[in-house]
Length: 336
Image 1 (spheres, helix red, strand yellow):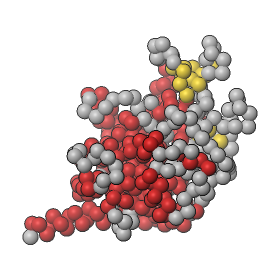
Image 2 (tube, one colour):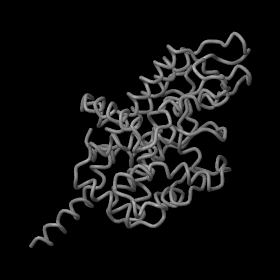
Image 3 (cartoon, one colour):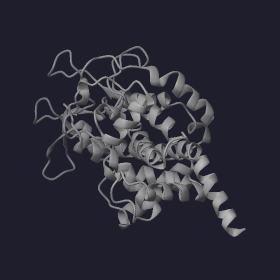
Image 4 (cartoon, helix red, strand yellow):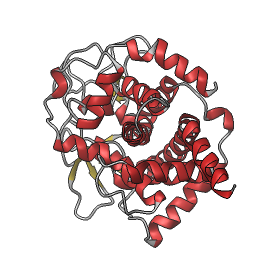
């Protein structure tokens, strides 16, 4: 599927879908991949972008004023920082947006992306793993939000600031879509008739931590990328591994519909994330994370981050074509 086909799908279908299922509130600690995971997705994507697209992104983020602290950063660092901004914005904005109806126009999507108002549900699209993927209501707006921000990013009539905001959201939400527990939940035994909010109400104890501390299953998966920061040996080693893994992906896996990405994540949650849990014999109602589960989770995380980075690069490369072609023409004119 080429980019024009993707945009056609977005305009005709995704933006008209409203989410059924009523209110759905995540616990305060619910994010997608942690900061390291989002940075890793950005690094993989950056390596796949052409030099002219990289330059256009650098100029776009440097000249905007809404996303703070990017103006004096090198282009790749600004790109990584922009991917974290939607979570920072969400924390600053009101968090009571679950009762606010989804945006109905592109202008509403743009306004909320800039303010963070009622964007809490943009980060997930949960389905019950006990039901078929396409035969149930969806809790969350991830698919619609990502579709809208891709469309805004590719709109040459918008200001550079508007497109910079969309760029940050696209980078962030592509990563979110590849985290299994941002696309799935299961029935919560402690709360009959209710779902576990993407593992947020599930308590796990990691046997590899000393001493073991209680975490939600959702947070445990969020933190699988670790906490290495850019510039450290650990971060460079891990991103080098991810880049090699990304280069081995088949191109047919990249230009696929957004819903396919979410279904992949849902399937991983249904078939591997939840079934791999074992009861903690010392803590009734909790689960024990053993080494085999950690190893499998680490491998899933690496694969999803590598794939997210490749897909993000494809979307951005196509959506910003007018900008980097403009940058190229300016360079030619200066030479002449």
